Image 1 (cartoon, one colour):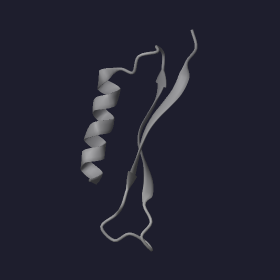
Image 2 (cartoon, helix red, strand yellow; image 1 turned 30 degrees about the vertical axis):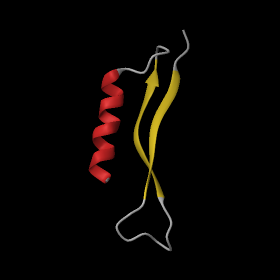
Image 3 (cartoon, helix red, strand yellow; image 1 turned 180 degrees about the vertical axis):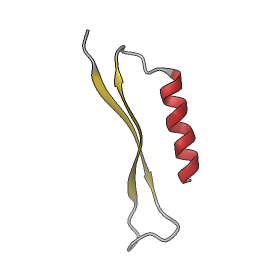
Image 4 (cartoon, one colour; image 1 turned 90 degrees about the vertical axis):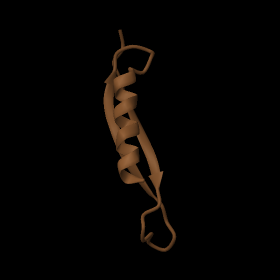
Length: 53
């Protein structure tokens, strides 16, 4: 069984963007052990995305 790294990213424009640029934010990284992404891993990334919005 392969163990592959996986990560959730988001593009965010800050309240005061630097020259109109966005920033890339790493929300969550983990090692996938199955083909399906676990619900808990996805939920954590969504919670963190809401924190930066």
